[in-house]
Structure formats: structure tokens, C-alpha cells
Length: 499
Ligand code: MLC
Ligand code: AMP
Image 1: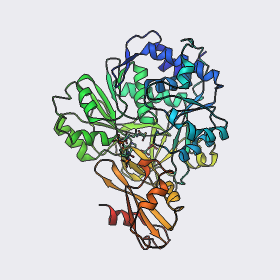
Image 2 (image 1 turned 180 degrees about the vertical axis):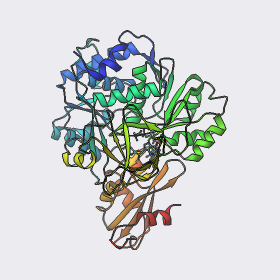
Image 3 (image 1 turned 45 degrees about the horizontal axis):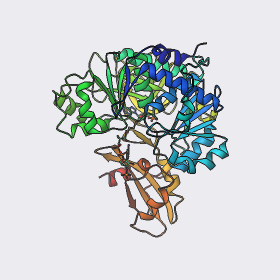
């Protein structure tokens, strides 16, 4: 039996007693412990009806058991679908109905709210709590620590990750075993990740960055991971002298720079700091180097494509650029009007093709057709430019997207919710520069009766939108600025309300 991802990431560690995950409570999970626990959870999944190709939807805390659940899902040949812990029950309803999972894993405290939703979708609820307890772990305890791995090939799906869309509806990106493995192999080689490394892991494990970029590479290379429940400066500064590698979003680095504990001496044992998921400001780049003597390595990726490009490990890491294509990824910059490739130096749409590029959107063949060309190139929605050496810089976005602290927020989704609120005529949601999150969400509101009180709007959206998506500021206007075609001019709103 072969299983592309399991055989490369998990199976080699069956007898590896070295430390893998070091948790906040100081517990150490060895690689071999991890493999055994994944096998027990695989039995539990199978006993709960999970068969190859089924979806396992997970909204669980960041604990080692959750990561073992990921490995177990791969081992039973099912499809892993992690969800942001901040999502509301209303948001979760959409994902569960769309993905129709066999099993939904959440915390005990979510069960009451989720039961009607899961009953309606035919999904069984299992629980996994922050202390590792729950019905999933109960079902796994006492099971055999061997599990006959289900056969899966490179093109079989391993994961489904939802990414919001410009239409306001989230799209499930179908990621194959080959997509994930090829990217992990390319990154491990490029960044020189080995079993001698120790990674500071403070990212959530429900997104590409924290789960695939960080954990798949660590599993592939046999790297020790300081597995933090969340980003916390005290823990980070305590950990840096014991570690060699860190991966983060730009907010991690601006927060570290805001603290005097970040010094050259502190980071002298660190080999590499990686940044991605949002643009790293040139000033952050320069300030980090001035303070620590280390240049952050910036890379670029997407849920649909895994990692696309990276600055070099050896060689110039240039602020404002994201470097060269990774692995066998091909990058082209095209004319957004007609899709024709543009020469180096011209700004256009970034497109990418390669083993890293997903198989399409779950249940959305039309969307897939719009964004994934017949020749295999995926249209990213990011605007960029290649230089003569093939180095890529991102210069903007063709898609209406806000990236706040590394989380993507699609204005359309927020506007759709706001427009349903009592008294709202229309709304326009846009991003403004924010010192901590990079961008912050602002909503311009036109109301039936002009009012300056945002409290009723906040109450209305609270049960519908995760906190991080909720506007940090509301502005009340008589009308929205529009161009002659009637399109709302968000650039004007940004200029007028950006500070
Ligand atoms: C938290 N809050 C945010 C926020 N994170 N608001 C806007 N944007 C964010 N990113 C809000 C909460 O709702 C809460 O609001 C308050 O801030 C405090 O919450 P917290 O949980 O204590 O925040 P904190 O732990 O400080 O989190 C900030 C953060 C976190 C930056 C550490 O957001 C984070 O881990 N971001 C990483 C996201 C990530 O992994 N992205 C990768 C996507 S993959 P209130 O009002 O209740 O006080 C991808 C592809 C690729 O993009 O290329 O990698
Ligand atoms: P997601 O859909 O969450 O995977 O987010 C992907 C988007 O994040 C990309 O399309 C880019 O817009 C953005 N992104 C990721 N890395 C970078 C980076 N290094 N610089 C600028 N934008 C980035």
C-alpha cells in the first residue's frame, strides 16, 4: 500500500524517538509517539464511519492531538478540512453544508450550537478539547498503535482549505497529496531545513502557512517544533535562544521590533526568520536587520497554490520582492485584459503553474474554469512584475481583498452582511493601513437615517462574522463616492478615511 503524503511525512518516523512537539506546558511528544497516536485516531475515525475520500472537518484547539488528527485523516485516505477557531456558528454552517463531512470535530462547548447544523448535513460530531480530552480521544484511547494505511496516490485529495471569494462565497481549494508533498520538498531543500533545526511555531494550524509550510516541512525533515498555542511575545523571546528557525506573518515581526528584548545577542543562534501571507514593509525589513543583523526571508504563496516564490536562502534577500519561483513552479505575468504574457518589467497579473497548484474549487466547476486556465496556469488575482533575472515583486491586488494580520478578509462578504442590517441603505468595506495588523477593516455606511452610532451594527454582525473580520471603524456618509460607471471608488474612501 502506498500513500503519497503519509509515506513521506509520517511513516519514516515510526521508530524515531527524538522530540517532535514541545508544547506550552513543557510536554514533549516524540515523533514515534505522534505516529502511534495518529494510528489510534485513524482507528477512531474509521470506527466512526470515515472512508477514503470523506471529509473530516476540524475546528479544534492548537494541540498535538489536532495535528495527529491531520496525520490520521491522511492515513485513512480522507480529506482534512481545518477551520478558523474564530468562525461563528453561522459561518460554520456554510462550510459544513458545502463540504458535507462524515465527521466534524469541535470542542465540547460547541456541541449544542453545532448539533442541528451537523444533523442537517449528516455529519457526526466528535470532540477534542484544549486539554486533549473529548469523544475523539476517548475513541482513540486503547486502539492499536498500528493502522493499515489506506492507499492514496499523488492526485488524490489530501486537504480542502476554504478561501473567501470576491463574490462573498468561500471556495474550497482542493489540494492533492502531490500539491502538498512537492511544496514541502521544495521548501525544505530551499531553506535547508533539517533535523538539526528547532522551529518556533506560533501560527494557527488551520491555514496553509501554519499547517503546510511549517508542519509539512518539519515532518519531512524531522525538525523539532516548539508548538505554541498562540503568538505571545514572552514565549517567543524565551524560545529564540533555544531555536534556529521561525516562520511568521509580518505582524509577528513588527510586534517583536516593538520590544526591547529583540537584540542581536538574543537571535545569535537563529538561522532563519521567514515571513509571508502578507506584504512585509520595507521599513520592517530594514529595521529588523538593523536591530538583529539578520535579514528576514520573504516568500509568497496562496491557499490554492501553496508557496509560489521565495527569496533565496543564499543570496540577496531584497525587500519588496518575493524572489524566485519554487520547485517546478512557473510564474508568468500577464495582461489582465487578455491574458497574454508580458515581458519582464511590465506590471500585470501573476499566474502560476506547477505541482504546487491545486486541483480546482470543491463543487464549483465554473469558478475553477474562471481562475484555472486550460493550460494549467492559475490566475492569482495579485499584480506583480518580474525583473530580468526572473525575480518577482508583488505590486498590488486585482482582487478586492484586505489582509489583516495575515488573515484574508473579502469586503464583499462583510458588505453582504452589513447590507442586511436594519436601516442600512448600502455599505462599502475597505482596508486602511494599520500599524499592527498591516491593514484594518473600515466600513463606510449609508443609512436611511444618518446616525453616528455603530453599536446596533456591531450587535447585528456579531453572531454572523468572526471578530477578526468585523470592521474596526465605521464611518457614516450621505452617499458613497462613485465613478461615472456607478462603481464605488474605494480608493477615495481609503484616502479620506485612511487615518
Ligand atoms: C486577532 N484579531 C484580529 C486579528 N487577529 N483582528 C484583525 N486581524 C487579525 N489578524 C482581533 C481579535 O478578534 C480580538 O478582537 C483581538 O484582535 C485580540 O485577539 P487575539 O486572538 O488575542 O489576537 P492575537 O493573538 O494578538 O492575534 C493576532 C495575530 C493572529 C496576528 C497573532 O491574527 C495570527 O496568528 N495571524 C496569523 C494568520 C495566519 O496564519 N495567516 C496565514 C494564512 S495562509 P477583540 O475586538 O475581540 O479584542 C496564507 C497563505 C500564505 O495567507 O502565503 O501563507
Ligand atoms: P490566502 O488566500 O489566505 O492563501 O492568501 C493569499 C494571498 O496572500 C495572496 O494572494 C497574496 O495577496 C497574499 N500574500 C501572501 N504572501 C505574500 C507576500 N509575501 N507579500 C504580499 N502578499 C502576500
